[in-house]
Length: 78
Image (cartoon, rainbow, N blue to C red):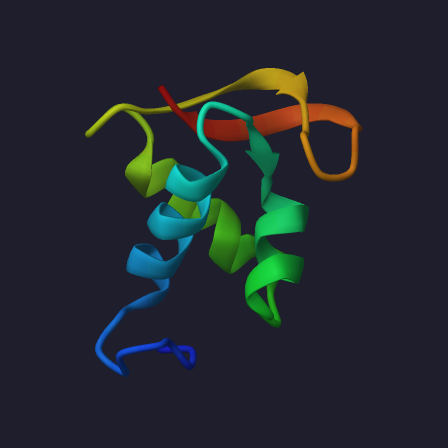
């Protein structure tokens, strides 16, 4: 699945990684990722953030989302 991106070649994974990187070091939850990127399914954001976690400075943990301020599982880039 692809969503509209500025250069037309970015995948959802690229878009999510770019969003998280722009917010760095502030964390963002999957619900806010889905909302900010216009993803129709929150689980798609969850799947991709889990894919990013543990590599290239991305981490997932329970914390407060910098967008909605709810305490939940969030992803950030260190």
